[in-house]
Length: 285
Image 1 (cartoon, rainbow, N blue to C red):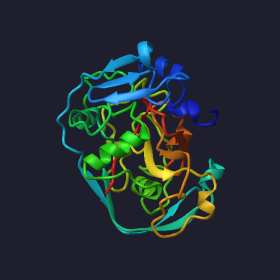
Image 2 (image 1 turned 30 degrees about the vertical axis):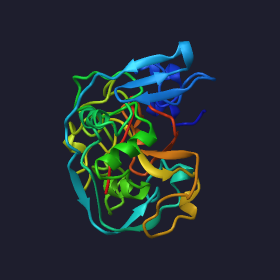
Image 3 (image 1 turned 90 degrees about the horizontal axis):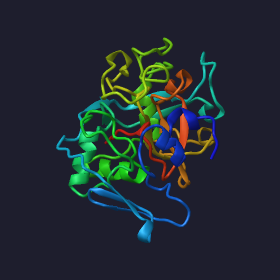
Image 4 (image 1 turned 60 degrees about the horizontal axis):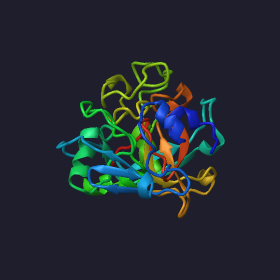
């Protein structure tokens, strides 16, 4: 798989994951002919005598994260106006009308996700975590498990439209904080740090509704299937993306992402089994 955004997120081949410190073969990226299984507290990669067991020793008791409210109404989704970095999948810009919703103030943390694993409602992450970094984003979690966590917490993944409105509001700003070019006070991005930071460390990057880290730190999964041309046919009211697909959308650049990926309208896509340290999520309801 090759795409322009591949290197900016870190989600991808097994070797790439090993290089950034995520440990053994991740869920869904096992070698040909092997299988990936899960049990509470362990990830089992492979089959037969060659199987590898990755024990998950982190514990957690953090409640689901607090949320910010996003009111009902219209906003302009996509790229246009004065933005000179528009990609084809961000066009055309179009008006979307959403009902009111809530979205997590921060990305789901390791401590929160570990509580779900302890409850046997979520599979362990597919790479080794530092159990002391409890406030870091929960990485190495594949899309189905992110959905499982949100359901366990009484929530769901946000739609792509909800995510973008929560990130940029209704005034057409380029970034969550406004139109000023991103720097390390706004977003943990390429050249700012080698790893994800604890969530909520950069209040200067807050969105109009008070959501944090919607640019930088980790790329965030959304509920929608990804389609490069969906904006050309998207309904105006409460769009939920294509009816079917084989890859999902990711939003908000991560700590490996260049500044262009921090734009609120920037879109990316991932395979269902992608799971790496720079890929995380937050929930909505």
